[in-house]
Image (cartoon, rainbow, N blue to C red; front, side):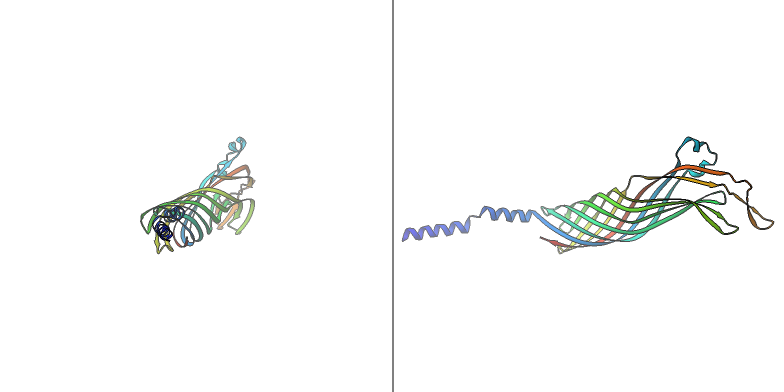
Length: 276
């Protein structure tokens, strides 16, 4: 009986004082890595740029004395306030280093139209539209204090956009407009995005982020045949009217337009996290 009591006493002491390896490892792992899943919404100020180049394609067109009218180098620029919902999945390592993925949709609906003219009657109209884009970024950060983190962003940005060009004749005397040639370009392209920001966390559940991103796309092109009669007009001050020149010259060229899209944003994002 004394032996049995001695064995039970030793067993109790062992269980109370020696940690179980599996439980200890799990506890350590739980403290070392903290996962979180979050949803967010941001208000952003976006700056959109579309670099447009029109160029003739062959040497015959280059020899055309009026061909310089087809060559242009200009920028579509516009600014827009936009809303961006988002989703985030990440892990905080050693309570200091962060690694995660951020998916965000940006509803831009921005457009910019610019016009160039040849003489007084022939005009070119170019319109850029950026409907929306989606960012899938890798987010990597470092906490300088328990609730403040600096982070970087990098990854693909997928944009839905279009670029339309029109060549039209306009007679100001009659207020008459006629579209001669139209070229449409509808695109869904993937660009490269980078950025960074600062995050302030409240009670491990709520976060406020101030961040900046920049996305750049490779140039997209379209080819079209542009042709028009050079109906240049002159103003007759005697009668206060515009008159076309006699025997207008036909001008034509095979043109390639290149459009390079880029956009940047600065915004304030509000997040809610489900940590586990």
